[in-house]
Image (cartoon, rainbow, N blue to C red; front, side, top):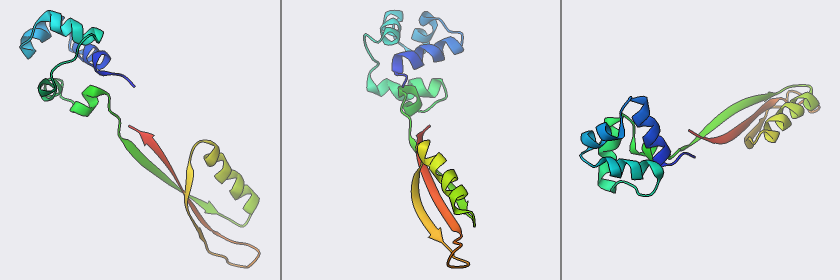
Length: 123
């Protein structure tokens, strides 16, 4: 995860600004900007909204905070159970978990249904 100093420096450079220029914009000194970018100090918490606003991002993005997002897929179980099990196992090997299994047997020997799988990723 990137931390504030890396993110801030990249944002400044993306805008084509020098440390002197961003210091003037934010009302601080170039030395302070240098310390932020090297990680020897951090801005006062009250400055974070203004910094984020200037770069048109959220404070979470500025701080490198990623939020968990749940992704879900529905896998259909068909007559050929082994083939369906292999597909489910492939997803399980990739870090997905089974959230729910719904079975709808057409015949006692040939179940059909769905497996709902879920994975939490950070965006």
